Image 1: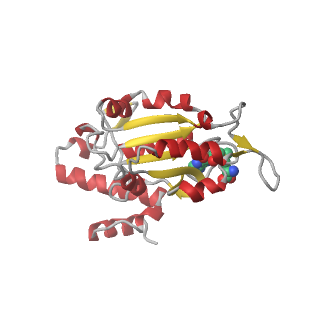
Image 2 (image 1 turned 120 degrees about the vertical axis):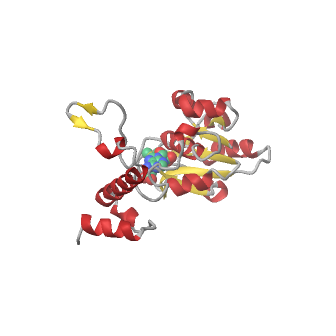
Image 3 (image 1 turned 60 degrees about the vertical axis):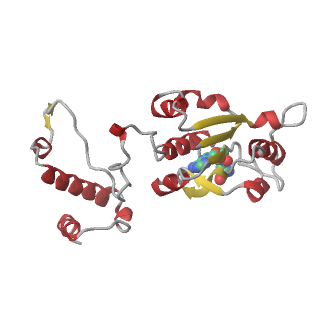
Length: 242
Ligand SMILES: C[S@@+](CC[C@H](N)C(=O)[O-])C[C@H]1O[C@@H](n2cnc3c(N)ncnc32)[C@H](O)[C@@H]1O
């Protein structure tokens, strides 16, 4: 999988992509990340990439010409790709979307700045508009990092055996159960005894019930989409008799 990131601030990516799992994935050739400075595609002598909006109003808009030239240069090798625009007006990034995007061969991610990009770029090039959530960031770079990170986790080999996506939050539609590690007691707080019992069936039941409880309390909207067993339903009824 190749990620091509189109940005006005390529140096922002140095830290997040040069550590830990993403660095290892790049080093092992499982993913490729290319950063493209949109300013390199500006044609005037001042390297202008933004201009004032038609119709007036505050802020600047990213010009269509440099961005289009950058996208076309990246696509020139003919490799199959999907173009993502980062925007608060897009569909919120979630587990299912990251998993689906991991099926692609190449993702071209546009990082917006200012008031966003000239809308004609969307019409001409964009396949997906993706939001990180219902808030406004100063630019799309953090969103691109989140896309690369969340999508890469679904690429075979990127996670080691100790880092499986299997029980992560959302993998079965629920938020994940709590984790503990040594020592068994910390500042008066004990690890739940069931986790040290060695009884795998009881541990699995406890984890399922913890995941159901957490999801019911924090994200009840998720429960509507989960395949619940009869035991789950009984447990939830006792938890919240309404
Ligand atoms: C200041 S924002 C522009 C917001 C835009 N005027 C609006 O109200 O929709 C600048 C850029 O940051 C990125 N951005 C900001 N918040 C985002 C979010 N929640 N999800 C995805 N991208 C976001 C987008 O690339 C956007 O073009």
